[in-house]
Amino acid sequence: MRSVKTLLASAAMAVGFAGAAAAEDPTKVGFIFVGPVGDGGWTYEHNQGRLAVEEAFGDKVETVFQESVPEGADAERAITQMALSGADLIFTTSFGYMDPTLAVAAKFPNVKFEHATGYKQADNVSVYSARFYEGRAVQGHIAGKMTESNIIGYIASFPIPEVIRGINSAYIHAKKVNPDVQFKIIWAYTWFDPAKEADAAKALIEQGADVILQHTDSTAPQAAAQEAGNVITFGQASDMSEYGPKPRVSSIIDDWAPYYIARTQAVMDGTWESVSTWDGIGAGMVGIGDISDAVPADVKAEAEALRDALSSGEYHAFTGPIMKQDGSAWLADGETADDGTLAGMGFYVEGIEGDIPQ
Image (tube, rainbow, N blue to C red):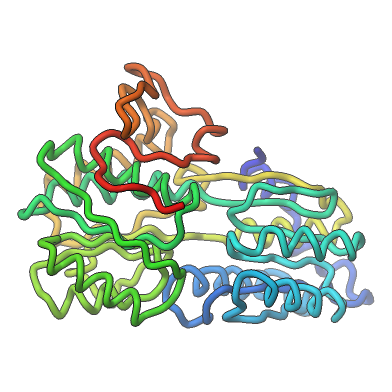
């Protein structure tokens, strides 16, 4: 897998090069978004990356986007239309766009495609994602330390490896610092639906959760926690700092801008090739939002130390001994998980209750 740092190194002359081709038509870069650009989370941050491309290249690029595109057949139609409109490079920014992206790419071999969070590549299709599970480890540590009820609620979107990895990582690190912790998980089957997300948060709070984690994109769980009082939350994909210093005590922040700039430059250079990129805190693709003063100073220091160890590679979020939920062995003492297992993760670790939906 290629790192963002490697990609950026190859695009070091991005802005200067852009100015050298003034007579050429602008490179057209398209984005397909699963939610509205104002969702405050996932799509908001991808759109910030789009705006960064515009800022970096000026009139050398033209960006276009379509928001709130459902996964499935609607996505294939939207991607096709964007390719027909003359896009040179198209970023499709949700897991459920994977097969539609491949289908459209086969019909437009001269268009470059980049699919977020998937695993299927083609000659003109790259894949990219971030190691969000590293951020979940930091959240789990804070959650395990701060819960008073020992019940942590988790709003999950879809039962795919990315989401399952996050649940496992958060649980492992909460359990390390609080052996009595329990996770209660609600599957919302949506990336962005404020009403569903609010209902899920309220249901978890009614079950005794005083910490809410979310793998959905709206700020509705933050609002529900604020209304309930004495419940802490974490921003998802974006800082969501308007709910700080409490309930939102920290966040995972996705920074796509460097990747989008590098990949756009590669198309402009004629050096674009299909790559697989999976970066985390160390490369800057995953950021840990400000840890608020609602978090005790010693817990904040521990969380920052964990963040730094993950960033440097000194520590891996999945380090044994870890058993699977069914009691079978997975990682021996000191052993770390390989990327292949993580990429296809379809099991809970020992201690998590309930089944993963099929």
